[in-house]
Image (tube, rainbow over the protein chains, first blue to last red):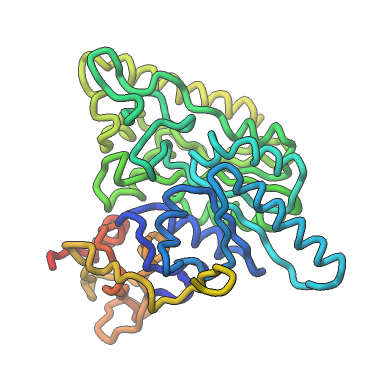
Length: 300
Length: 90
């Protein structure tokens, strides 16, 4: 075991072989110089890391329910402020919430919105694996157009999910947060820089981190880094940050690859490579291009 | 359950996930450049850079694996820029 790397999150958890979120946790928490308190929304991360009687967390950790991770952290953070005021505690403490896309895009959105608006001093880290993976791949509002999930199954009439994904970064930015960023687990240096900046910023901050799921995207366990990198190289998952409402693109890809490069290694998009579903790939390419152009426009 | 229903981290209670996989990583000591690219990507934090007399790079360090926890996913072999790590059957 690598002691330095495992100082906040130890091995022995039961996440799938080749899962991406342990690397995200370690990269983000490793950037904090102060002690950290972690809250966690329900999801793979919560279920696999706290299997009684063992916990992989070496930091103080609280799980409450699916929908209220941010609200729980708001309470913890406010209690800390009161203790500080009364002189009962004098050390600096950082507060970090981890949530999956189900617990953030869908179920925890209102509590996240409330906590961002109230201006609590915490960092929300979303690991986005684009569906409810803990319960076996049901669609969430982060699931991309055309993906095969349990609740949008592919059949004679259906080609998978028929709706576009939600633009959560714009929703977060609409709360006038000082710092929000989109990152990718394959670019750890970029993720660490963003985590450091977010932890140093006073007030609520937000990170949206791309986290491929080997089990339900259906790709070999060794491929998460390669796949995550392709997502950015095709402009499917651009890296950018929003500082005081100003968009800034962190990485511009010259000659982005076609979206097929990202789709082809994954079982959830397997059905798209047929004559009948050609239009879906074209539509996905169009959505990707539109999102990128919008981002370029916003960052000017 | 412990007092206050708080579970303390105790590695001794950790399930040994090393028995999950059917393959495990082996490093080629002469090819490993000691770059540590594999280290942060390992989901189990099972890779450390250790001094090795047979290492053929300037740092004298090669990747070393903790087989108690390695699940055999093969991410380290995939990200290795020198193709120094191979997955072998147990």
